[in-house]
Length: 173
Image (cartoon, rainbow, N blue to C red; front, top):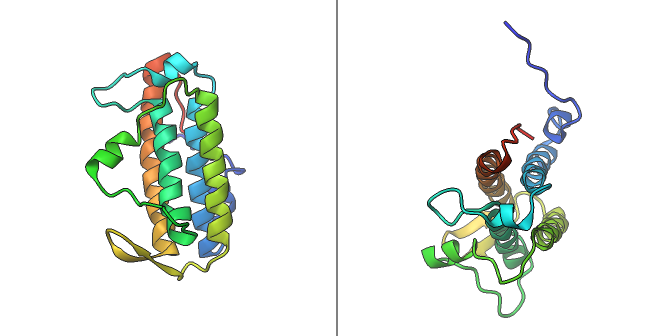
């Protein structure tokens, strides 16, 4: 049997004996970074090219995940007047739509800023902190973190497949 080597510097590996918060943070940041790595090196045309029947593109994934970050962290943990939490299927589909002239670099920068804001807000509260959520009633920060790991990992997988279809690039990270 072949031994499988795991990069010991990966954040989830480093956090393998950490407390709950360290593990959740490490896995979420790992998947956030994976999405960005899958986008890097693509041209704007490659990142916006539709390769599957849905409107899912690498650029659209970055757009969607930046919105998801804002929905689950600032909108819930630090809401401002006028914030509207999108709840419809139409809102979800529209979150992948790009504005005319948006570049992959702009989308990646916006996603990185949204992630930084999410980290900053999450750090202010204990995992047991509970907030109102329009569809679910109440959710804890712990639940938000686990949901965001799931959501980001799901789309990291989509980005992985789209990148392979684009230029043959493969790899878990």
